[in-house]
Amino acid sequence: MQLHPNVTIERPHEARRYTRSEDYVAAWKATPEDQVVTVSEFLSEHKIVAVLARIDRGADVLHCAAFYELQDGRIARGTEVWSAQA
Image (cartoon, rainbow, N blue to C red):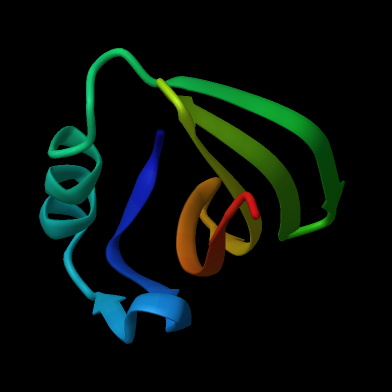
């Protein structure tokens, strides 16, 4: 994953805002290693990218809708909304 040095990623469902690429990467590294990420939809229009994804973590399933803005070919801003499967 290529992140812009001045990246901002919002996760409103967690009331989190990552403003350093190192913090965002560290959050991902803290997740279980045996998870399986499946991207079901990926749409790109110029510098905007939208993604629908699913993460399987054993018996837990998470769904994500994410929207990113690119700058210089890297993610500069984004919003990710994660939800547990009911």
